[in-house]
Image 1 (spheres, rainbow, N blue to C red):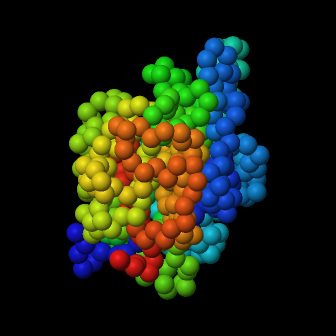
Image 2 (image 1 turned 90 degrees about the vertical axis):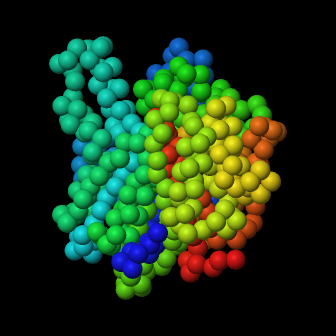
Length: 411
């Protein structure tokens, strides 16, 4: 519950690197049209895998956004996080010089950090021996680079840079961390989100447990076959309402509340009770009821276990016959790991500001065990005022964030 010292937290900037669009405008167009860019994976040698399609970012030039850092010192995931952060800062109408005068938080969630580079180093050592390993590549592997590189690129010195490795819910964890810091008055502005690059390690892990789809991702569909791995980054500028109003910023939306929990029930299997509890925590923190929520952006991976369990948790919290539309952006983006809930958060903000609900594409027949309106295949015009975004991860790490329109208009 808020006390007299808590601050309202608003979103003033967004930045996106994704397979369906680089930059918020292209990302919005992709969500509206139900775009998906599935192609054979090129990030690593896929020989031996029965299926190896994914959602890679292609045609992306990081030099357009990264101006102060030698690109050779950044792994691909760091290039994504820095580029998306620069886009978000531009969207917020701030310069690095202006931000450098303020106490700032940078928090980035990730699943793999720079595991793509680690994969490459291991492969090089196996093929050519340790002498062939490139020291400059080894130096960019630490996951902390994803947030530290943002601070370095923007010339920030009054900054806390945090990387949160809470797997596939990490983007929401990072947003929740920034939300709490601003609400408490520790800082009044933050850059937060998530980033990951396609890598062999994670693809192989999902492949070995039988959750890689052969052709397409079909969340909540009766015949869904699993995930498609993806990559990218989503970064947001969060700031206190006082800060945003003082500088005349354009406010996209408001962060109303967040809920986090970790059940540690199973290494990979989701737990219905825990997911439901996390949603309740977020709604209570936001001060809203289930009836106030206009749609849910689900974790929605397209695996048999996740979709049934998450849908059951939604029905438990919202009611079997009164649950709002529940969609999965992973049907378009693939599973971008630590970036997933950050990109979905930006999708939620765009849905609020642009008046639509994104679709769940590739849908043929809803699984009766899920029993939700997943907004199949085509976006619908709507005026969502309050939206819930779910992020669920291995190990029972759950993070749910609730966003609202600004100025807030309750029905």
